[in-house]
Image 1 (cartoon, rainbow, N blue to C red):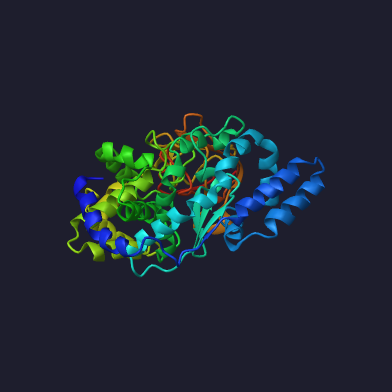
Image 2: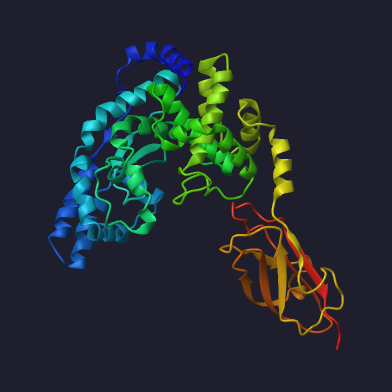
Amino acid sequence: MTMRLLALAIVFATPLLNACAQDVRTQVHTGDVTNFWTAFDLIQATRDTAEQRRLLHHHFIDPASPGQSGMFAARRCTPDDYLHAIRSYPRFWASVRANMLRAADHAPAMRESAARLRAMFPAMRPADIYFTVGVLRSGGTVHDGMVLIGTELSLAESETTTDELPDELGHLPAFFATNRTEHLAFVNVHELVHTQQPGRWGYDLLSQCLHEGIAEFAATLAMNTPSYTPCVAYGEAHTEAVRSVFEEELFAYWIDRWIWNDTLGPFPVRDMGYYVGYAMARSFYERSVDKERAFTELIGLNCEDRAAVEAFADRCGWLSAPLSELRARFETARPRVTGIAEFVNGSDHVDPDLKTITLLFDRPMSTHYRSTDQGGRGAACAPEIRAIRPAPDGRSVQYDVALEPGHCYEFILQEGYRDERNVQLVPFEVSFTTAGR
């Protein structure tokens, strides 16, 4: 964050903060953490799996607060998930236990951070904060207007033991290295902003980046501190490169190279979409004369409203060109089918004994995805497809088919096909007629 921006935040927020050190309307709940550890100890004391399940329900699941119940729902946490984690990661739990049981120590800071946000956003609706256990699925989220802190992740530290964790949780050591405990109040404001935004989620990459990035930027203003998130630091140091790649992938249907990506996307830091949304929000705020109104507009942006999102993107001044121009560039650059190896598309004398149809792409495609549908004339012209086999290099895909003589055939390669950057294929309809006997 620039010194100019920090100065603006101080001038804007300080007068109201002096009048309200803590937000008494914000309640902080920590009982679920205590309940979890009661259940944990009793479960560890028996090898009877039925008894373990009963203990988990009796001491943790059945008495769950609204916030803990929200975590169950938001992250689809089942009793089996908790029992598996308790049995499988004893050293992890031992290393994070003391921090989790000190959750109540963070309550004053959580209420103070809520007050800081309310100072800048007086229309803020009350939102209770729950310290929960999310079975290693969430460090923080929101549900039904509540802030849910996943203590086993957010209260972990760089020294937390992770050697038992499976490969799919391989991102957690880097996550813990950020020492989120030191930044818990910042995380709280980020999540509180989500409880105030009119839309629950974005509808595509751009809107989801804004949904998360606005919350991150708002937290920097309310807390008068730069973001601790690694993606923001990386983005600030490589803005032009990030913007260039983002604009190339902006209209892709999938967000998993930029948001919540367990594997790295186009850069050596996860979740770069957070930075993109953050940078767009900051650009909008810095260009605005009325800072109070700008802050309110940011939080009030409905990221489920396509027209509002696109208008904001064009207004904020961060993208290199209007969205209409970027969309035209994107459409031009999408992957395409260049032809069929065995015949010319539209042929009316294809050999009915043909067993394979090979579609050629203009670039390597991901071998993990494929998507096929009937053509415009429906099931009557759909061939029997016995197998779909992408080439190892991704430059083609082979359809194993069974054909009849004197028959018309159609099928469509859909947008579910993606290139190596997850950009969707321009749909291609295969159409031909087989020769008669």
